[in-house]
Length: 372
Ligand SMILES: [Zn+2]
Ligand SMILES: [Zn+2]
Image 1 (cartoon, helix red, strand yellow):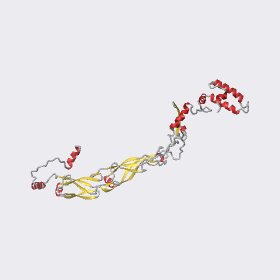
Image 2 (cartoon, rainbow, N blue to C red; image 1 turned 90 degrees about the horizontal axis):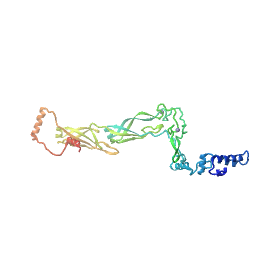
Image 3 (cartoon, rainbow, N blue to C red; image 1 turned 30 degrees about the vertical axis):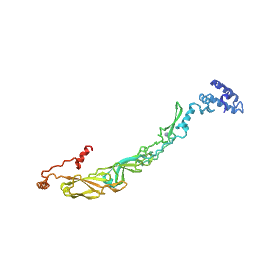
Image 4 (tube, rainbow, N blue to C red; image 1 turned 135 degrees about the vertical axis):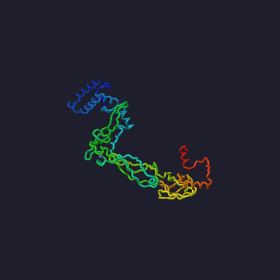
């Protein structure tokens, strides 16, 4: 590479006027019309003048840049910025620009409450759930463009989806990729949006889904239905649908794990004499055996008639808590019979029995309210 100063025959600190004067003199002498065979030298002189007469090119050349006056390694901030980007990415010189974004994406997952009754939760079954979710638009098949219209390449980014921006900073020139504001990164522009979905490719629609409920589910369990969530934009696949189980209260039974609990009010006479009391369960009518002399708070267990267990064999039990009902309004005859009974049992002038043991459902209730 020839030295431009030497070519023009000027010193390194030559003024613009000196450089111009030297060039004119040499050009007149070396012009191909005047001096055939000196084309190469004429070109060298022309290049030297082109670089040294341009203040920026001359500065770059002085700082070790290329012979055409471009910035070179170590040539000030320009060179540093290239290095900076090579190490930290984000610039054109680091290689590779982000790809345009796809309009097609997977839809979001959806979470919906699934209200079921106790029988369905305990023994499984099916339940219908109404959901409102995003579906792929049928008018445009999810493309978002009015059918039959073109979706041209973005004129601002030419399809890249990003535009490069040069900024001068203290560290030199920075090249950053920014999402193209015209196409918002897609590389194409929907000029005629679908009138049904306004360009989103999706519409909201009602849907009734019949769900298989496994036996033994409880409040808060989630049932996952793959591919039944929101449709994705641009005709993308649907996400998943999650159904959170809410078990409605049952008028008789409460759930306690796999066991079911209920109370059974029985007449005083049945409690005293013993009885077989029918109870409607999920397995039809069953008999609750009340032993003679049963008390309020006594528990009768019906084995194997409770709820099923999620992913486990075997059922829980039903626990029936007895409540003895004292007769209220008495007829004259009933009153006489009870007085007779009291006499026979030596309870005509009854005495109570004090103690510190709280028994029976009402004292338990009191304990609950007392925070125990
Ligand atoms: Zn664009
Ligand atoms: Zn559409």
